[in-house]
Amino acid sequence: MEKKDYTPMWQSLGIDLEAHDGLLSVLGQAYGDIFLSQKRRPRSMGYLDFVLSEIHGLRIEELLAAKKQGGKVIGTFCLYVPEEIILAVGGVCVGLCAGASIGTEAAEAVLPRNTCALIKSFVGFKLSRLCPYVEACDLVIGETTCDGKKKAYEIFGEFKPTFVLEVPQMKSPEDKTLWLSELRRLVAKIEEVAGRRVTPEGLMAGIKAVNAKRAALQRLARLRKARPAPISGLDALLINQVAFYEDPTRFTQQVNAICDELVERIQRGQGVAPAEAARLLIAGCPMAAPNWKVPAVVEQSGAVIVGEESCVGERGTRNQVAETGRTVDEMLAHIADRYLQIDCACFTPNTERTDHIVSLARELEADGVIHYSLLFCTPYLMEAYGVRKALKGEGIPLLEVETDYSMEDMGQLATRVQAFIERLGK
Ligand code: BJ8
Image 1 (cartoon, rainbow, N blue to C red):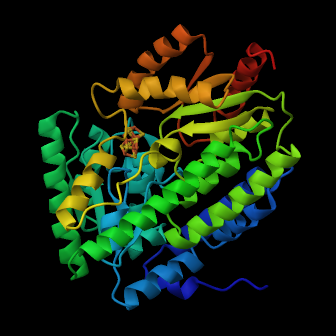
Image 2 (image 1 turned 45 degrees about the vertical axis):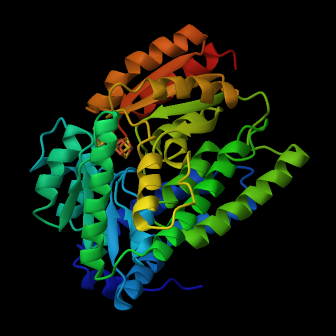
Image 3 (image 1 turned 60 degrees about the vertical axis):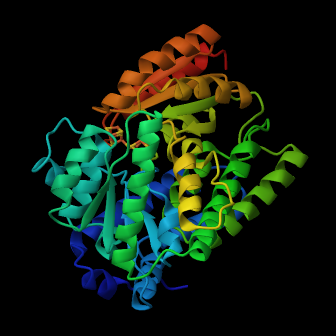
């Protein structure tokens, strides 16, 4: 089938067409090399291949169609922003964290060079007019998590309407009160932008839709405990990345279809790698699309990734919002409870994350853990100390990786990963 020409749509959004063409061609090449070249992929991953091929096409067309019907598109950068509230007003929520280095030069004109790649990427995408998702947004919601993001929103806000949500840094009763009041402030802002009230019916529908999405992703995570692993870590990561862009109901159905196929594979003993391949857990910073660098190096070295302790992964999908309550305020209290359980390294103390990495590694029968930090990410780099101590105490081998989005260290990374796999006796 001939591919539709989306140039007029991108033009209408003010995209820099030449640079954008370059981005799409690099992305298409990388996707082919990394994903389509994998052996023994589940058939149903065809859905993800299609979504990726239309990531700046059909999905953007859908967003613009929703806007024409009066819906609002709200962009987010963090797991602490509850999608449920956006869905409650008939809005569309899109994750805007970016995983490519293409806008770095533009970003470095306004940000310090020692800023993490994720922040440089989203600021660079905006300044270089490369991302149709950002351009389609009616509002962007930032949050006070790490210092880099918090300050970057001040700059980003000069280019796009931005609302910053105050996320506490601790989890005391006072912090919980602050958090709930912040969510009320968010509701008021979303209502103002959408021109619609959040009703109990709307909010409950949002809660159910997002719970169903998380349940499908949790199901996927559980199936990866099987030996041999029924799906590659790369494909599982891709599913978790697409969760931030896709229509939640369609996505949930498709992830469940993938899981059905994985169940059959497990029954047949069919895996993506031999049963004796090294099983690794990745823990640390989020990997926003198209950041596939480390998982590609790991799996091309013969290991299989069986879980991601990451916001683009299990940290983002565990725990659900209670589906009870009659009023918006009662439901909001459940939302506040669920979201404050997220164990991001921006919190102190955050020992639950370290404990969780140990229990996840045990549960998934991981042979080792790769702690992944982006360069200059103070929260995760600092927290590596506790992770190191905890894993050592449990006798779980650890490899610490600190990198960015550039491809310059690929060779060095591959050498370190291969040496780690050998150390595991694999
Ligand atoms: S809940 S991890 S999505 S804040 S990598 S920008 S922390 S310097 S992304 Fe995050 Fe929310 Fe936490 Fe998750 Fe800062 Fe580190 Fe960069 Fe980071």
